[in-house]
Length: 264
Length: 299
Image (cartoon, rainbow over all chains, first blue to last red; front, top):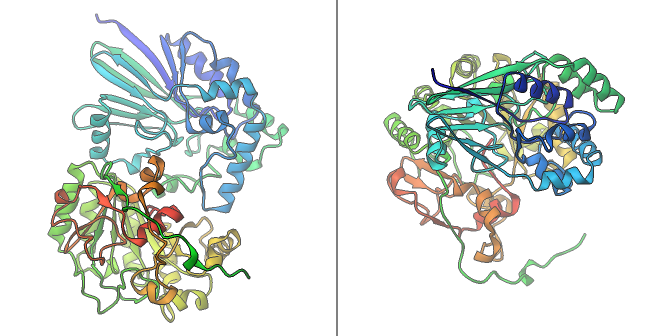
């Protein structure tokens, strides 16, 4: 019988230290030999500095820089989302200003210097992990916007058989006609605009040459998170998302198809 | 008011920059050529009911371009014209393209009746990839819009868009900022208010700067001699952000670098997509608008 190896991959922490704790606990309980974080520590949640003790200096954890981490790490003025919708811009700025103001300098410096991709060999597969896409940190790879032939091009161009990405906040996975795989691991920081309060990460099981990827929901104490968000004075639409599972802001970048599945 | 004498600007020196195609991400198709049911005063390719400079594309031409693009790994497709819904085979074209990837159709909305709205919404619902309809609207009042797009178009455009929305497809409104104040935050807010009054409470909006060519040249004036790009204007990031580093436009007359330049002498790159992958020279003043305004034609 061949040896089974397990890995966990997640992204989009968005200051949600409670879902981060829950994800790490499940991954470790399942015997994952390594856990990968694909970036974007900051965002809509409360108390940014509470995620860093969980992420830093754990031998089993590998953390990558996302576009939000780049902005916070370099102390930029905004997250550079560039929304047209004044409402989206308003809330994006609140979220960014709050995170920038409540992230300690030593953590900002740590974010600034993180790597921007990981490569591994699992079974016979060349595995690549990126934040947005392998070619651009802030490129959105939405399920409805990625033709098979485009993903094939990306995998060819970047010499990978399995690609993991995050950045959009909504998970999906696809096996291409040639057997290669692309997995958007979603986000553990907020629910995936599906009416559920759980968040998602990817569990990878490697057995022989086979790489099996399962998107797994994580339940955490979302009521406690919502309570703390209110105490911190974060906007009520952010709290609503945590409590209902429906996105309320930053919808402009979402393709019509993904957006039509949500409430707003 | 401050008068600026632009004739005193130093003229850019040196050759125009060359821009390589990084990857063909975006394939544009001029499905109805330059034929349009409207003759908007700001149209940069002077489309109208009598402009047959670029004719309709045949269904097979569209199929060939989309299949070639798909083999190259295109990420998204756009249909424009002219007015795409004037084409008798537009539905077949939409259906075949959505087999290969996400599609946006750019329309003036005037021809969207109940039946077409229902078909488009149903197509949106069923397609494997994303499907967007983008409706042009150039003001928040009939007076503002109709001065650009023609008499009585304001209500016709809104009626078409509202039909789409009611059928279940939330269109993207594209505003060309000929009225400069519409580009400002307060101007944008007026669109949100107008559309909310019409029942579109979560509207999707895109604002684009006008290009001073085609009919717009007569309306708003031509480019000044200093409005040109030179090699030293473009760093790596600027090159990456220019849409023409990742797009091409197919018409019935051949392949062009982008949707803006299809009427410009010398812009034609070849007969087939495969012939049009070479670098381009950004020597047209319209290239200056894309660079300065950060224009991307994408949704």
